[in-house]
Image 1: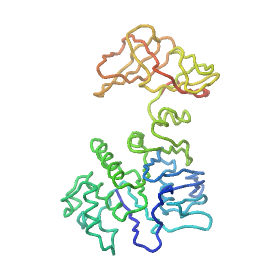
Image 2: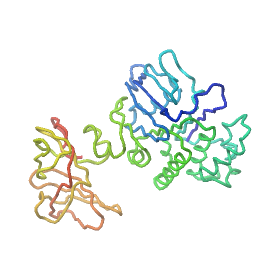
Image 3: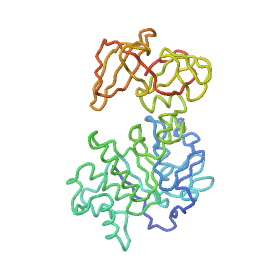
Image 4: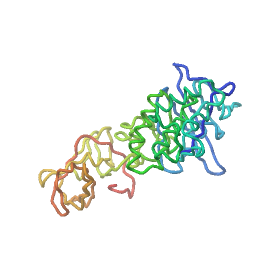
Length: 368
């Protein structure tokens, strides 16, 4: 995880956010590279002490937004305020080394010839309290007693914590993290995510995380900004984006979903699964969004009749794909691992609770 530390020992840095000031306010940010419009009219606010995830597919503009905030790119338009002070706007552009921002990238980029202590102290040149600050950072990231080691003697997770400690040591106004876990194996990624979240909370620092991983964003962030094609599509809590996506596209990006055709009349939709209650009223031809966990399987009975096509066992749960007999519709259902479902078995499918629906599109896919 390459780290760029912006020291606060320079003259006239951006001050700490005042108690009544948001950490970051972006308004109408725009950035193009030649004919490619990377960022289009992006606006959002990062509150003090908040962790915000910028989530989206590759090429959606999330890393460019991060670089604009850091001062590594100059916007074509819009404004950026850090701690209440404008750092980018009409006639204003504060250089990156005056913004007091810590950057953490996916490659560690620790200096191999320096010990852990010297790596952390790198951004503290000229400070009288360097030794004390390094000790504080080692304690914060849980690496007490390892200050004398070299990076090659550390695990990947430990190296990442050193990189984060180096970014936090100069006491930046905020930390920006760009895909910080992508180089870790799956088994280590969850634990390191929890470590990083704890460290940021304990440090009381505001942070923005860029990721394309939905689980990562949902498990770490207070709020998520979902970007598509350079624009901010939806901003809200993880629960908001998962349970109340703003569009069909957002629903499919935020996790597995079945799109079930139906006809809506207000708060009810007639579907091959029977009548489904709607969270928001609709009328006409719709596609009802049903998450796999919102469907319930039972033995052949009063629900919509179906046949098990296949199933996969993942330990705590199993994923089952069924085909409705009367509609030739394939559905993905998540069940408790204790139930035994086998290919060819007749079942009934029920909908648990209310659902969202969007106007049907021509030639739309019935299930995902």
